[in-house]
Each structure stands twice: as C-alpha cells, then as structure tokens.
Length: 511
Image 1 (tube, rainbow, N blue to C red):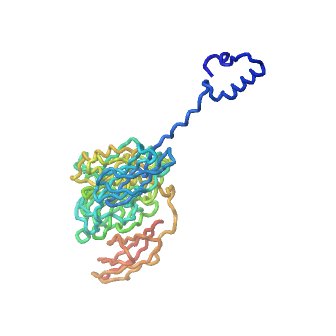
Image 2: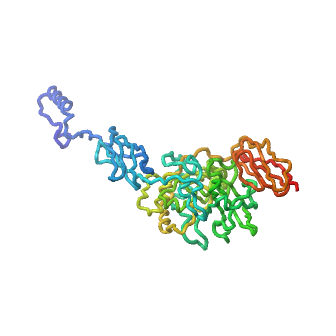
Image 3: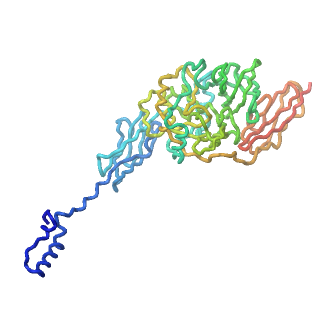
C-alpha cells in the first residue's frame, strides 16, 4: 500500500458492490503481507562471544605441567587454538596441557576461538627453578644461618603443600573483606633497625655437640608447654632485641637432632638458663601436631620458623613453603594445622587460626623486583597461614642485612582483593575429643652407684611426643639413658592429639 491516509489507501472504483467488495477483501488479504506500512521482524542480534581460561594462571617449577581449559561463551563451537606467546616460554598441546620450559620467567598461555579468531584470552604462568633439597645437618651454624636447601618438616606437611590448584573457599570474599580487601601486604621483616630493633623474628642454628642444654622455667603457660632442658645459647637472639617488651620469641634449630625449639616471652637468666611464658619443641622430621586446644610459642599452636621468609631461600630463587601472617581480629575457631584460637569473635566472616590464603593465579608479578617476586611466587604456590593476631596482612620473616627494604616495600602493591582463601577443612569451634595418652609403665633401676648411668624404659599408648625431666627433655623410642649425680625423681610426659599424661620414677644414687 502507498503511504497516506486510510481513506486514500482504501479508495476503489465503483464497479459494483459485490465485485468491488470481493476485490477489496482479496486486496487486503492477499496483499497485506507486502504492505509498506508493516515492518519485517529484525533478525536476532549475534551473541556476544568471549573466551575465558581456567585456571586464571599458574605457578610451576621448570619442566612442570599444568592443564588449562578454555570456555567459549556465546557459541556452540568450543574449539580453540592454544599457544605460548613467548618463544622460550614452554609449549602447550592442542588440548591445553602446558609444559614449562627449563628456564625461569613469567610467560603467557593464549587461547583463540575457532568460531571468531578475533576473540581470545591469555593467562600468566610463573616458572621458577626449584632449589635442590638439603639435609637438616647440612645447615650452617649461627644466627640467621643458611639451611642450604633444607625444608622444615616432610614434603606432605601442611606448610609445604602446593595449594596453587586447590579450590577456593565459598566464604572467601567475606573473609577477605573482613581482614581488609583494600589493605596491602606488609613485609614484617627486612634489613637494619626499626625503632632500634632488628626487623623480623630472628633464629639461630646450633649443633648438639657444641651447645649444651639449659633449663627453662615457665612463667605463664607451663601447662601447655614442652619441658626442657633445651639447647639455647646464652646469646640467642631475642625478637625485638634484648630490651624488647613485645613477644620476645626465641627460635633455635638443632641441626644434629633436627629439632626446633621455640619460646615466647623469653628472658635470659644470669646462670645461663631462660625464663619463658611458653615453649614448644618440634620434630622437623615429623608431622605430629600439638594436642588439640594447646597453644605454642605462637597463638595458633603452630611452629613459627617454617613460616618465615628467609634470605637464604630468596637468594636461592624460591621459597618452598607457606608464609606466616597476622590479622587484627581472628575467629574463635581454628583449622588444621592450627590447634588453638585466640579470640572471642564468633563471626563466620572472621578468619580462624590456621586459615590459608593465597595470591590469585591471575595476578601478574613479573614487574616486581627480584626479592618481592620470590615472595609473591611462594604466595601463589603455597599461600600464607594465619598464626597470630596483629596487623592486617603482615608477612613474617627473619631479619637479615642483605634484604633490600625498597624491594620488599613493593609488596604493598598487592591488596587483600588480590588474595583468596583456600578451601578450609573442618572449622573447629570446640576442641575435638578422643582417647588421651596413657603410660602403662615407666621404670628404672631402684638404685645405682655414684657415677653410674641408668636406663629408663617406658610403654605408652595414644602418644606422639615424649619428654623426660630433668636432664633430657625431648626423647624418642621407648628407653633413654640418664646420668644422675644424686637421687633424682624423673618425670615422663607423654603428649598426643587429645592431651597429655605423666608418670614418675625415682633413681636412688648410693655413695
């Protein structure tokens, strides 16, 4: 129909009512679909096509592998073409299996849609050289000594687990927001002094053959402490310095026995002994934890030393374990490997002790300076474990004059929003219960002549750690030799996941 008024459009010759009416009906019915006054339905818009890659990045050792998957939204054609952007960045198969090169660096994997080659996605891959493993007795001696590749605890220990591919906790966003999504990381370690004290938590490596054990008296949490004696040098470094009024941690690693001694609120005494609020002893060859509900030298019941960033690791090119961190307010709860909480806050958004957070895989760390980049690579692979109440996102490390504080300061560029909570296991809001340790026998000779030794023997159940006081401290197995110089009552302490128990035996020394 032509455009214009309806009257004009319907005007027809007067050829007779019947014929004209039929002609008009035929015209309206037969020609209406072609009328210029109507509109054809517009074709549906083309769907928006996009490509995403999961995981959104990866951290690998040289020659390691990572499977990537591409999803094409807006198309039934899910085919993609994979490639690595850098010539020396490794290789990837047509199914998305990436193999890292033999050299370190940050590279990028790309997926291009077959349906629309103008649509693609890419993700970063950080490749590091894994340092060779070392032995405990290969560590150097002294304050801040190099461990030469030794990693505390077995490879499957929580501190040493690679969590880069672990699921994200469903409550991650709420927990990150509670701690501080806009707050940056802060390295609580470095070179030089801050307010007159070294920056960080110091440690010292000793050897059993050269360092005598000394007694430790507890001034606060003795009922949850491991008894001495302990091989603590008279000049062992104290966190914050000798005049500190802070946590005053003392960390001592015995490279010969592969034991770690950690004390809190520690003060040296004139006779070479030490006073401490609490102390814990860790077998660096074992995964045994503290009893449920027990603290340690740290609020969470965790060891401190394995969570420190150490200069010798960074110099070697990789930190092979999770790092320790703090938050202003934690939850009245814990997740393993923690065994203790230090809060009255019951909010599900508050982080429980033992919570593990990692740097998101898609965060590009290639532009960070060397020291910071090693720390961030560890946060992608191993994450960081909540150990104490303090300031938000404070990372723990050992003081060392070789740290570059300017490089470390760039870590503040990583905000809480760049982090995510690794899926938690059981969240304990009450200590689990079970069968407590029991000592069935603890025996020794009734008497020995002066100058002789005595063999003490015992049998126990549901125990993972044993201590004999005085004289020995940590013991293993089912027997130990003592050398009393006078009649002495020895106490065996047996600890297990569900508490502790003691038993005594007296050895009489005759002239």
